[in-house]
Figure 1: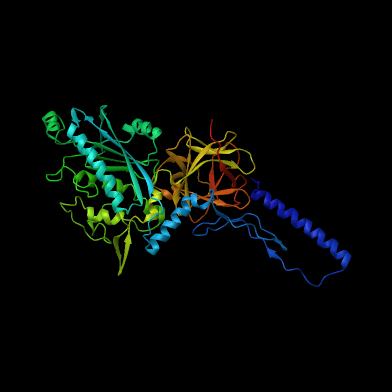
Figure 2: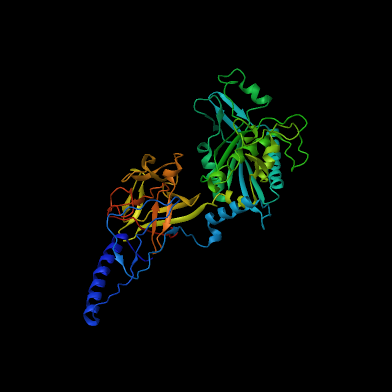
Length: 495
């Protein structure tokens, strides 16, 4: 790619200006004085475009140069063909939502669920196990979950559930400050990684069983029994994460609901719990697309959710499934003033929830003067320029923003220190903090083979490294000497 730095552009302007003056003087000597001055067009300083457009500060006056076209306007990060770009897919989904279009996808989205039934879990003296009936019941729940969602979604999604039972003893985790327990994702990560290495997986559900007569007899009288129990359901990660994760307690089927009569009718209570916790994983669509998308608890209605009506649980359609059905079909009423919108999952939203739908790939970020690569160091949680290429995972975060994580430390991301948008503030890597403005970035194409890495704040400050080995910081365009332009290109596959 062509290398083109702003400081070189300033030098080029000066040289060009002096050369122009000499040429004009020479022409005047040959042809006499001209009474007409050429009209001069002012070259605009290179700016970085954001929403809203940031103020641009320059420390060097830009001379007026005759007959010179302006530099290209920076554009968003371009990634392969537009149909592969999650930004384009998001745009298509928003257009469908805005127009109230429910046209079915040409092909259903293939969505793969890893479902792990942990048959033996413990907490202190407490010892919970699944019976043979529990295993049979969970198999029916998985089938009911799969067929119910496919039917509600008008078959825009084709779900495949891989259900496995794990007999190894797994410890439960107590939620901080609470009595209830859950199966933590990190506790079972080795199993997740094992199955994900063998199959394409989009999300993970895990299930344990603390109910039933055998569990009661085994634990009655033990310390903590009746005080600590596994929470009905919990979602810890959604599709915005590396992989989604929800966990829930199987409990026992209500009288009259077993055996399962019709897989497409959500008649099993555990099915409703599984769907509920999985639906939490989809809530990131509100942030990703910038549209109204229901919280999974919006069935409660006012006052917690004033724009939604209250739904009641139907004993024949468990756990507010009327509400779940409306959300998953994109037809949940949302009232704002006198207007009613139908919100939820529109057909073109389904492709966005797959595990890697928002991942752009593996990239290196090289200084435009080829002095080195933008490199992350876990030990120092800092960024600088070094000779060794660092591979970055770039993930779309919605609204033209991107998350940048070093491949070596995928749980960390490029982070603006203390979320302060101030001149000279440090840029490093850190765990997810919830401060999205400090951990998402605009990648602006300068039109000359380089990109600027820009904060989404109105200031539009740029990631800057003044020299190799120095800490990366944010500065306004042209504010200090150093590297503000970067060559971003796909990394070669490691061998």
